[in-house]
Image (cartoon, rainbow, N blue to C red):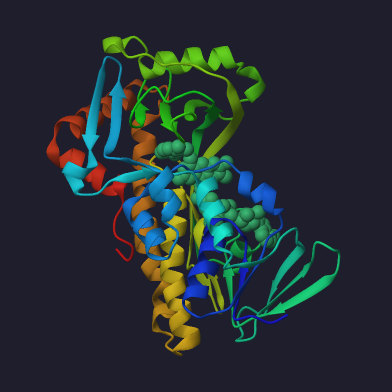
Length: 386
Ligand code: FAD
Ligand code: DHB
């Protein structure tokens, strides 16, 4: 087989890149190890920043998002006995949207613009430092395949082969001493906008997916077994940390439909390119989830990469491709800092000195216009190309 861009991975980065390339008149073929059903059902991110929404809308992927997504003006930040609303629209002129990664993924599949080989095995990248790179794999029917291309886009997340093939000059990493226990519950959210809560027992987050589905998270120690957290224990701990009873607010529990533990890590590898292999999304960087940046960073990467590849392959202009890694990394590092900052401000470590600094910082971002605006600008998202 031959195509212009061989895309490894059919997550949001890979499918959106194929869609953007298709609109730009460049052919792409996507190779994915998992089945279409598995990829579509993975429960992950839930918040889109305004530049992600604008991008999706501008390429024909905004109709269901506008109809079924929910626009939020801001978030609540909470400490025991206090809840403060930060209005991003007032502070930074931008909002965010609640729209699950599963829904973005469905819209990309429905657009039908990506040719995807699902259930591919033994995916290998070859000759990435030449102008004739290729990918070999075994297709779903067990046949050996070779896909020749002008460019390979590594969109295969943190476990795929691309990041190692890219032979990074440098890797940066931070592992955090806590994880999140995340639940999905069939119950109406108990809040109109997300609540990020600092509590001496650990962080808690009340998010949502729709009027009838809530998504909530608890800070737990690394290595936690979800089996140690029966539903009643989860709801009781969420109620304590989120301030059930405070000023008459109530957390309404409901049936839990999904429960999982997520470890937290920051990771960046540079450059995001080796020869004709370009990395985008989690293949190049991971952020801890606090602040909801992972999916938005993947979207911003492929917005830049698609423009660079259209210029390279249609207009024979290599300049945007040559600056892709530097351009993408400016935003990657901003979001890496923001996610680290939100994470370390909100998760308890057991150290009393750290706790006092966290509370002082939270008081500053909830009472000073300058502090609140900094958080709002980063959370609601900087323009693509920043
Ligand atoms: P992925 O979505 O990981 O897609 C990569 C794709 O490559 C996958 O489909 C994978 O199957 C495929 N692949 C892997 N190996 C190969 C191979 N050898 N060959 C071919 N294909 C391969 N972000 C947030 O902002 N908020 C959240 O709440 C949040 N929760 C998360 C929960 C979990 C459990 C995880 C793992 C991530 C979470 N994230 C969250 C991060 C966010 O989901 C990611 O940043 C986002 O999915 C990145 O998209 P991507 O397309 O780069 O990578
Ligand atoms: C969600 C996840 C986050 O990490 C976050 O900061 C906000 C919301 C979510 O899954 O809904």
